[in-house]
Structure formats: structure tokens, C-alpha cells
Image 1 (cartoon, helix red, strand yellow):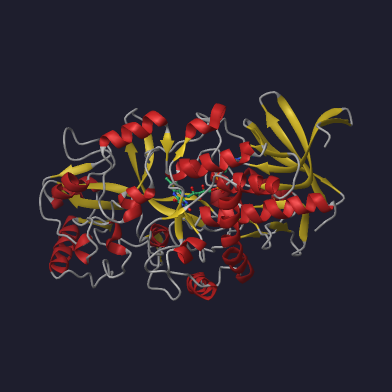
Image 2 (cartoon, rainbow, N blue to C red):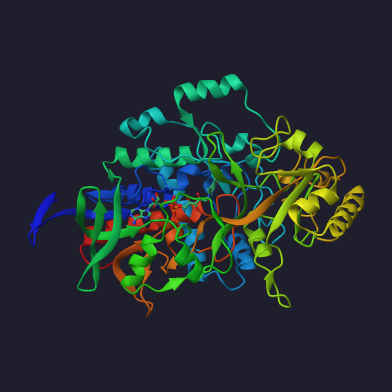
Length: 554
Ligand SMILES: Cc1cc2nc3c(=O)[nH]c(=O)nc-3n(C[C@H](O)[C@H](O)[C@H](O)COP(=O)(O)OP(=O)(O)OC[C@H]3O[C@@H](n4cnc5c(N)ncnc54)[C@H](O)[C@@H]3O)c2cc1C
């Protein structure tokens, strides 16, 4: 393969497969392309670090019908997986993509485990997010994570991977309350040993292992390269133009270009144009500004799933460096002795429901007043909640942080929040009466087996149902946040981007949050975003490598 050629006077680099972005979808695509015969594979990342949101994440992937379930003696079935997705579709999931996802997922997993350091284990007992739906795995098995990974193996890349502002780098999901569903803590000396050896878990382990897979195979990785447009020749995507600190760069790709540039959640104009309701707090990497979306729009890609995001309720907290950061409240809103209320002082949803599904509660508009009924909303709790569960880094000791409102009575707290005090007192009294009977007839909190899982460590409804009766009382505003958007160029099952007539745009692939998600508006289970990202990244990498070897449109 020619390394560099002179073309029309400017320096142009030649690759077989070019991958844009460096999250899980991108790195999966790059390792796969190289492992399926592509010669020179390049990963081009806009940020100064690699890993995107994927490295900041829990790192779980949701793969139905995976071989770990067979080995554990609880095999899954294709029919169940498809029935489950269909039950969540509301006619938004494209059946062809759902089938490609369910069929390719197990292949992807085996390929990585057999050919790379990217290996997985089951996150124990993690039920699907809608466990009462037909075809769901109530006992878990579809959610997987990577074992700890030693970042020392990454050489010069060891300190060039994005990091979470919320999650510890040195734990596994299987060891956390979120992963196991029971309260756990890791001995301090174990954590210290992991830090000393730089052993990392969760999204760090996933990205670290994918990065190692790429480096082992000679994939070239460059940061500080912002893709800004495609070179299209004879109707085929033949290359990419970049902005870099050293000026413009042009790259040619004989096999294909794989877009994996994440969502557009950090681009307010695109959010306003497409997203179905307020998205106030993106929790992803800030470089996800929709570049891949606009690049593909410019060359006539058909778009799909544009109104959707992976929703998550978020609060604003101030971290130890005094910086305001979005804090996802998953476990926090499920704990007993807490509810969420809107400005009329009323509860409005099952607070323990799946975080993605909860987005719909924020987006409900009252037709009469034409206002969002549940914005603003507050998480409200009492002092024992704070002492036992804590919120962000605050456990009820020392001065109350600025981001938290507190008062000695519910009426005073309502005054501070500007909501109806009498109604708030009535809502809390009703809640307390209901939880005394261990049931929530209003919104069914605690009835799904999913609900108590992130509660107080037991698996009974009491894990999430508890009275709010001991002053002082506290409240913090909860906002509609997102892990990322999930609309973009539509693809077929091989991740090839389609044009407005449904024809393949030759040479262009998309995977991860940049593509029109195969999941419609749902989030099937833990790992429901990274799972599809890796599956369609794998499909894209494999197809592009074959395309390159054949030298003709496949
Ligand atoms: C705290 C947290 C926990 C999470 N836990 C999980 C979990 O356990 N399981 C799960 O499934 N999901 C989880 N998610 C969601 C998941 O992390 C994302 O959906 C996923 O990482 C998206 O992957 P991606 O590869 O599409 O994009 P990203 O990982 O965001 O990568 C996109 C990359 O593209 C780069 N880029 C953007 N524009 C350009 C350009 N013009 N040129 C070159 N590069 C560009 C970006 O800089 C970025 O590095 C979590 C999210 C958060 C925030």
C-alpha cells in the first residue's frame, strides 16, 4: 500500500479503511477491519484524548443470545430477543436492523474474544430493563462487561483516554451497587493496589482493551483531527478532509469510511431542530457536536430516529474542584425515603422506572396550559435518606452544598422551591400512607423486579418504598439529560449508509450513536447503547475490509 502520494499538488494520505471517532463503535470497527484483511487502517479522533463517551461509561454491552449465557446454562433465544425488542418498538424499530443486531451480536462477541484482548463476562443477575415484557431476560445474562484491564499495556496511550467525572476508574460494574443490585464496597487496600497497578474497569476496561486490540494490529490512531467533509468521487465516498492543528489534512480510503463520531447532543442548533423535547444536560464527551451527522446530510444520507436520545435524569452538582458537572441520578431516585415532584407539588411518575423511559415523563405537555407539566421537577428526600445513601459526594455532614435546597419543614422547603406547599404536604402524606402498605397504587413503584434493584440493597418493594418523615428535608432539581442522541444516517444491517432512495452510499458506513439507532426509542438492558455500537462497528469493519479486498462495491 502506498503511504503517501502527491495528488493535485497537495499531500494526500492513503488508507484502506478510515474510521472517524475513537469510542467503542470506532475502535471495534477499526480492529475488525484490520482483523478481516484490511491493510492500512486509521482512526481519526477530533479530541486530544481517545475513547469518547465510551471510556467514561459503565462499559456494559447488551448482547442477546451470547455464548456466555450458553456456558452458564441459561441459553437465550433469537425469537425471545426479537419478541422483546418488538414489544418495546412502538413501531420505531426497523425489523431488519433488529434482526441484524441480534444475529451479528454473538458473532461479534466470539470474534473479539477469540482474536483480541477484548473479553467479557456476565454482569450477574442484571435483568433487562423492562423485565415484564415478553421475551425479556428476567434473570439477566444479556448484559456483559470486560474484566479489569492494566492500562500499563497501552504504552504512550496510557494517559490519553477520556475519563468519567462521575465513576471511579478502578471498579467493575459487577462490584458496584448499580451492577450487582446489592450494596457492595471494595476494601480500600484492594482499590489502592489497583490504582498502583493502574488496573481499570467499566468503560475504561472496554476502551482500554479495544485500544490494545487496535494497537496490537497496527491500526494507526491520531488525535486532534476533526473530520469536516467527505471526498466523493463517482458517487462513492473515497476520502475525508480534516482540520488539524497543523492545517488541513486529506485522507483517501479505498475500502471505506466508517463514521463513529457519536451523537449531536452538544450542538444546541441540531438538538433544537430534531430532538423531541428539552435535552438540558448532555452527560457525554463535549466533542460530540454532530459533525458526522452534518457531513452525511451534505452528501444526501437518509436520516432516521432523529428525535431520540438515550435519556437519563440528571442533577447539577459541584465537584471537588468547584466545577459544576451533570450527575446522573439512577440509584439516587430509586432509594426509599425519596420521591420526585413537579411544580404543583405532585408526584408524576414511577421514580424507579428505567432512566431512558423516564425521559418521556419530562416531555409531557399539558394541553390546557401548554406547559411541560413536569419541568422543573425535584428529587425530594429526608435526612435519614441522606445519611444512609448520600447524594453525589454529600452524606449529610458539614455545610449543605449550594446545589441542594433544605428546610426544617415541607412547607418551608416548598416556599424555597416556589411550589405549592399545601399540595406538597398532601403528596408526601399520601406517599407515606401508601408505603406503609408497601405498595404504590398511584404509579406502581416497586412492582417491577427492576424497581427495587437500585434501592436499599434488598430485592423487596421496601428497597424503594420508604416514608419521608424526618426533618430536615432536602430537594434538588432534576433535569432531562442524555447519554447521547441516537439519530443519524440510516443504514442497512451491514452498517452501510443509505441515501434518500434507500440505496447504499458506496464507501460509507455508520456505527454507534451517530447512526439511526437499531433500538428506536428504547433501551433494552444495561449495555443497550454500547452493545449496538460494537455490533454495527463490527459489521462495518468486516464489510469495509471485504469491500477493500474485493476492490469492487460489495
Ligand atoms: C456515565 C455514563 C455511563 C454509561 N454507561 C453505559 C453502559 O454501561 N453501557 C452502555 O451501553 N452505554 C453506557 N453509556 C452510554 C455510552 O457511553 C454511549 O452511548 C456510547 O459511548 C456512545 O459510543 P460512540 O462510540 O457512538 O460515541 P463516543 O464514545 O461518544 O465517541 C465518539 C467520538 O467521536 C469523536 N468525534 C466527534 N466528532 C468528530 C469529528 N468531526 N472527527 C473525528 N472525531 C470526532 C468524539 O470526540 C468522540 O471521541 C454511558 C454513558 C455515560 C455518560
